[in-house]
Image (cartoon, rainbow, N blue to C red):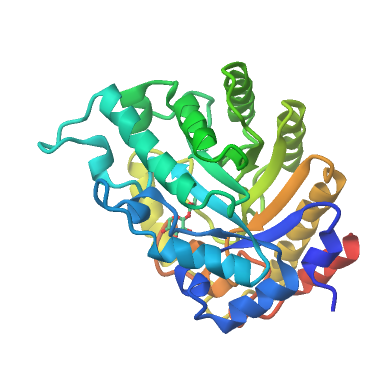
Amino acid sequence: QTGLKDAVSGHFLIGAAINQRQSDGKDANATKVLKRHFNTIVAENCMKSGLLQPRENKFDFRAADRFVDYAEKNGQVPIGHCLIWHSQAPRWFFTDDEGKRVSREVMIERMRKHISTVVGRYKGRIKGWDVVNEAIEDDGSFRRSPFYEIVGEDFIEIAFKAAHEADPDVELYYNDFSMSKPGKRAAVCRLVKRLKDAGCRIDGVGMQSHNGLDYPDLSDYEASIDSFAACGVKVMITELDVNVLPNPRGFGGAAVEQNFEYQKKYNPYTAGLPEDMAEKLRERYKALFDIYRRHSGQISRITLWGISDANSWLNNWPVPGRTNYPLLFDRKYNEKPVVDDIINMY
Ligand code: XIL
């Protein structure tokens, strides 16, 4: 039977983020869908710095090892996510014993140690790493993360160099969200150029693509694919999903609080997604995969942020306990009609 991966082969890899239960091999439905439809996986959480190095120099590779074993066993290309990210990083990374922020020198040493240990461990077994995640704001300025504040702008180069030293053959990516925003697009292009000028290896730019039914604007999205490709890197759609519930991004101050209260109560589709909404979701995915098809020379991988609606992070973000429908497989791991639409498009 033709799966998604067969349909899009010759265009790009297609895959999904999997959670720890899944990479532990305890979710037979997930393994079944993966084998039929996908050929690449990324760890949803277990390769993030706080999980790999919860205390300084105390690495815990158990879950990540199982993830890589699982990929190999099931014929999936494993992608590493992510080396340097301010979120889900352990607090010790940025502070000394007294809780004061460390110096630039100490911070650089810790980054290098983390990167060389993690990349070195999976040398030759991982296709590529998200080296730096979410370092640029939507307006194109640098995010004021502890990495930026302690080390300065060159923390990104330092990370890419350390990753390349640890595994000269592994692909290296920059990954971020809201990549269709023009200010961010321009800044990411500047960053790619800057890394190349500094002699760093960079193979790809990841557009997370946590999309909604009406965002991003698809012409902006396409413009970003073109711009990144024009910088001489591969484009990857790295965390694709389509949120059908409203979210409070873009609000500020008191409005956030008000909006959060509203979001918590706004959980209208617990009994199932109404037909008109399901149709909107289907059309949205078709429009996205039409773009990917037309840009397939520029795109090397599409990764969905999860397999089934049952385990999507969007049931719990930005507020916990909602019922969302963002993926290609429903809560019972049955494929939605759009899966066939996509297969027929390619
Ligand atoms: C999310 C996971 O899906 C959740 O399980 C976790 O609680 C928080 O992180 N951008 C990223 C991903 O790069 O790592 C995030 O994953 C989603 C947003």
